[in-house]
Length: 88
Image (cartoon, rainbow, N blue to C red):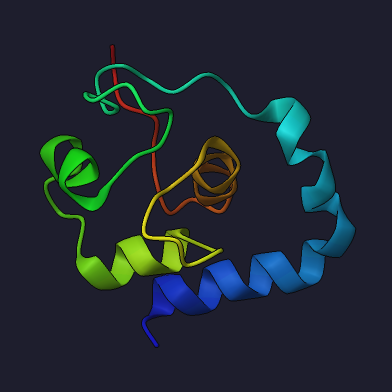
């Protein structure tokens, strides 16, 4: 497990129920990332914007393991410092 993975896991455990509020904080998908407009970010879409994104990093952010990053997962990763919102 990478240090970033451990950090995300620690944040998730320490914050517990606090992440239940994330749906209210989640925003609309960024069209600069979500190029196919499905409302989720795939690994290729993320890689196009975050050049240093690895498959392992993507899997860490993809908390439900469905192969896509939804807005709640993106918000959690941003809050944990694993991602910065793209400029735009």
